[in-house]
Length: 492
Image 1 (cartoon, one colour):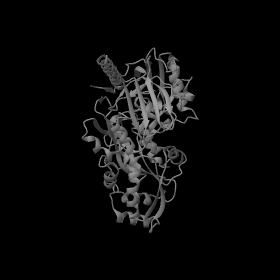
Image 2 (cartoon, helix red, strand yellow; image 1 turned 120 degrees about the horizontal axis):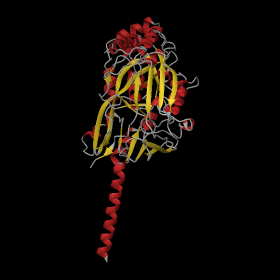
Image 3 (tube, rainbow, N blue to C red; image 1 turned 90 degrees about the vertical axis):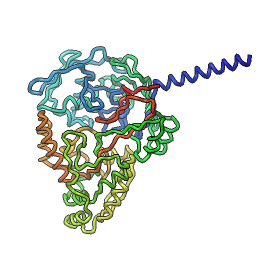
Image 4 (cartoon, helix red, strand yellow; image 1 turned 120 degrees about the vertical axis):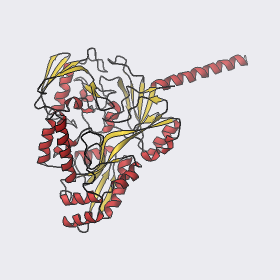
């Protein structure tokens, strides 16, 4: 009887282990350093929103793949008129939202009307202002007319800002997101996690994962311990200083790639003394990029001299526009009327690269007489005070939106840069489809903001992921914001 009982217990244990292994093979727990303030990417600027929902819960007419190329999304195909002003999309049939309501061309029209409305809170509304008319041809066909050609139109409608939402549920997407994607929202435990589960009636190819939990862990030590303990299966943007712990551990893989994150010392150009070019030039000369990259990213960052990603074919190297020169910085400050320097605040969001860079920049600026008070802020507070209310002197942030140099053409944007010449060039770029001309314009725009020292251009943020060695399908690079789950799977 004892032998039989032992066999029974062993069998039960085997069944339990098999059950746990099966659960592991279809579920994933992703460590996220920032909790999103809401879950509607069409109504918020925070990257943390897209990390959870982009291409997982919500989808656009097109989608961006991990190489940055445009792929079909909810639209199966499209045609473009010879003059580049009319786009006609054919939509997939049989698509439903997660609440069971049907998806059709009326939802597309509603989504873009909402983006373009006077009271729109879409963070990238300006990207879609070339849309002059939207016509529903039939339930599965919709037509867009543009007021001017837009070389990035197909890319921009594939971003998180343009995912399709439904009239029935759009108002509640901030807390109860309902999209058409392969994963449906299940619950949000504030301060802890968001849970997604595979949506059974999904119209496209079903992902291997059946469940994904995003666990919010803002502290590097806690994230490290969670990885080592197996409490999470990976993270997409891990602190560079802790990577050596995992590089030689066969239970993990370190995946290093690039992002669209231009990390800048954002400067309030509308507030004295930063409204003076000589002051901004002095700060640019005071910055030692390599010291910041070594100290804040452990060498993983790539130096930049303007607001453009080095991997982009339009990029021009402007890092020598204002080389590190302490004496030149002091002379420019004196020229601007600040021979003894001045005091300012540096407001820092709760991400490692910003906090570490802030310490280094404060030390560098002290050498030229600029005394910085470092103010650490939580993410929601930073979004409200700095981004929305423009109540800041200086801050450090990575702008992770792709091809976003156009933000400098908006004088109401949070760093308050107002240059009519730049604004005109941006309008021309937006209306240009010829690649050679677009490159020429983009490089001219990069040069203008570099010479104007609008912000302190520091480095391009690397994507440094740490994942369980048995996971495959994670994106190495981040051409858009998000942790896309559709290709992630476990292997034996």
